[in-house]
Length: 394
Image (cartoon, rainbow, N blue to C red; front, side, top):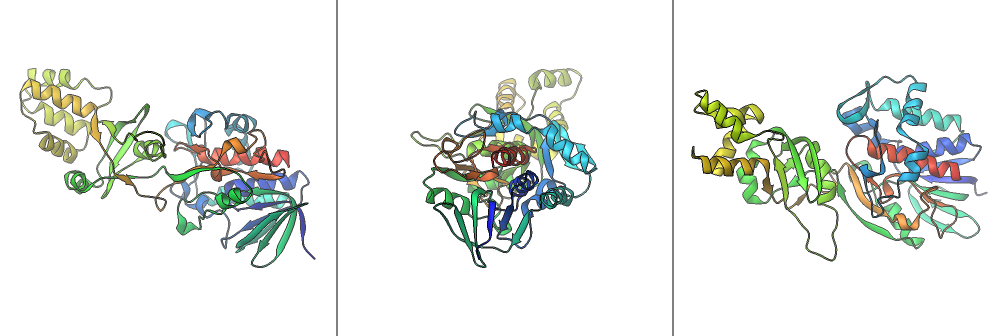
């Protein structure tokens, strides 16, 4: 006899588990199907193993989407304060880092434990190691796995994106959307390191490990955080933030590829150099650069720029330091991307419920949707908020 549920949730990540627990506690008989052998694999490695589970300040402006307003409804209905209250209910110690980012004091497993306890409270059935072979719908949804076939009145797709395939990421959610006639915005690696061409690698990549606080700019977007030189190009929070915009597919016009780094944000470099020189510091340029960025980077900068002690050269150098122009050639790809940009088109979904407009009972939540957050807990908050919206509609 085919097991029958009120709702089947595909995916036991952050969004899938949270949605299942909420639905179960609302009296829905819920089943979670997960292809991996255990739940929350990406959650466990997030935030350096401490899980940046939300951010104190979240708005739709912190997300990329073809519809920049889509996330507003879900984010308003389940806020960071709501998830923080859940964390505090379970007495999980946490702390705030820069820019409102909240991390567990201990390991990310604490957040996974919360989600599992919420599922237990909702009497949710969890099945692991289930490969999804077919999903169909007539009077109900039928999900066939390698082990069994299940039926339900509703189906929630929480399968995530393509990032970190070694953790089990697949394109299942996008394939299912296509099978039900829903449009998918092209997926791309987001929050991902950028790579240089061979010439720039020779110039800079032997400095791998050198970092500096910068303002990184691409088009109209700027982020002030650390940038890090790697063996292949650039990484660090400022670059990861910018990458989500840089790597975003562009159609209908030539893509702008150049990024700019301000290595001396808020500093009047020429004025400070003149003050130091007046005080007798003949190496003022080198001294100031070494104070503001790591000495190895400062020395390489002067070498590449061919700096001389003349004032015209000083002015040109200052312009370059405030606007170091670089043209990455690509990204480290889905293997190193923290999240996937693009996804199921928001035009296909009801922003209040996450339900497909033309397929009653079909919901998409979390990373599989074309809503991609900045670095700093925003993608987890989208998981919680979108899962809540779907669970309340079930």
